[in-house]
Amino acid sequence: QVQLVESGGGLVQTGGSLRLSCAASGRTFSSSTMGWFRQAPGMERDFVAAIDWIGGNIYYADSVKGRFIISRDNAKKTLYLQMNTLKPEDTAVYYCALRWSYTVSTRDYDYDYWGQGTQVTVSS
Image 1 (tube, rainbow, N blue to C red):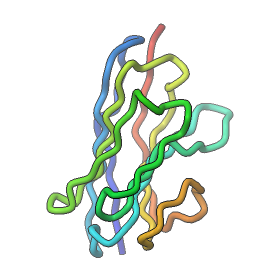
Image 2 (image 1 turned 180 degrees about the horizontal axis):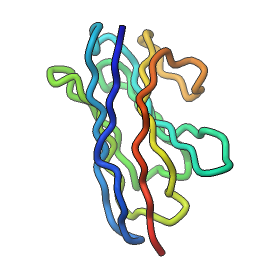
Image 3 (image 1 turned 135 degrees about the vertical axis):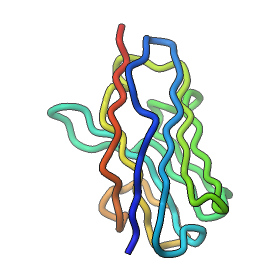
Image 4 (image 1 turned 90 degrees about the horizontal axis):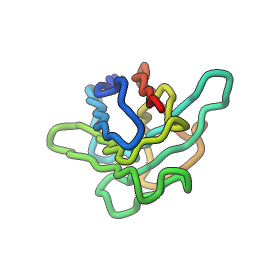
């Protein structure tokens, strides 16, 4: 069993930055692919970023490319999302997810475990 707990969300002004963290416990974290997704009110859950088990393959949604950075620390079993130059359209609940595979995926249904989410609100 795996537990994922996100933290670091909050209220920030346009142009500001936040760093999300996702702490994992349970089975081996280092052999998994990790991803960040987000869901705005009334919208579907969207892919944000994903990273393979060693950080060699990283994918970003076009909407966040150049502004967000995904990273992981396998020794700490923690996934990060550094979010810079935030925009009001980044407002959403952000979820981290774990996939028991070495292959990165941008599809939410490929992921096996999910955190409870953390709210990010960007004011204009």
